[in-house]
Image (tube, rainbow, N blue to C red; front, side, top):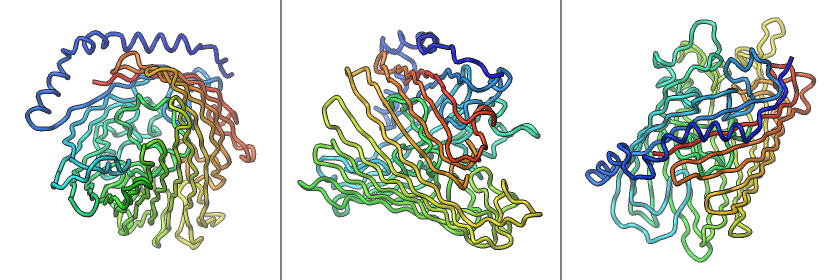
Length: 456
């Protein structure tokens, strides 16, 4: 028996506000210990300390009481994975910024070309439910604190995980119109959303798109970012990098992957156009690894099996109070269909169904209206076609089309505390009766959620 959706958004907002309230006075007085520490560190060494606490409450109308007591009962919804109260993240970091006119993985920026070499770094540590997808195979995903009990699916027991989402050095080189390098472990920058978000408050929505699940999250390697054009036609930057693979500290097949982007901005920075991609083999070569690197790499093969992901996005402001974003995603996982090339989730020795490849695509768009500097309303619609069931794992392995409409708002109680209530409806199509919601019992779901994001 499923539960009716009777928890109002207002009640969830009040609960999140109660969680955030104890932090308000200290920050408003400007004498919080973290603030004093961060100011002293920045003044002495140019290193900025930052962090946030994200707590969420969520509920859907499809899961049973017993299902809701476990983890990931909102799946395949991403972001608010659990029902009830969850610690999304306690996230802290340190950064020494480079002096630059290009922000790697994000955007070229206006201003003169710096003519001095500059270097910096960024390191982060996270604990919470977001630590599970942030873990990198061969690094923090293998730490003892993150080990799951025998026979327990990752995340199903509401265990909080520890991760270091980004650890990298950056260098600005005064070449041409500005060149920067990023070396280490970092968010790929492929796709409209950039995980992991170290300051999620400005994003109106608590939950994420299906496109974000499909795109590469973190990578290990080197990325070059170069300004190509800076004149009355706008700003154009290009990026190209060589990395181990998706979420991969330890290479699982002996071949590297490419990431890259082209990013154009209008001179007033009101219009952004981006194309970004990742391309490389993602299969597990069992002559190089002792076990498949699940859940990121599901294929086993002694031969290269190409995975590629392409994102085209645009953002513009038709008015000062209105912003529109849209993204088109195209991707595929190749498979040669030969003996030895298997998907560990679907392979049946009796059938000999060796993996022969699959494609996916998605489209999402959102409109955000700012009624004041502290209050923003958003509406988002999306559809994602994954009829081969390869792009949305591990949130779901069900093949078909996934659709969602989300309404949300972002309310800044002060510069350091943001509330984001949200109402979301998801449904499947072309799924041939295989249901993804309510632990496989439903083909649609309505979810009401709210989170509090407290920056320090």
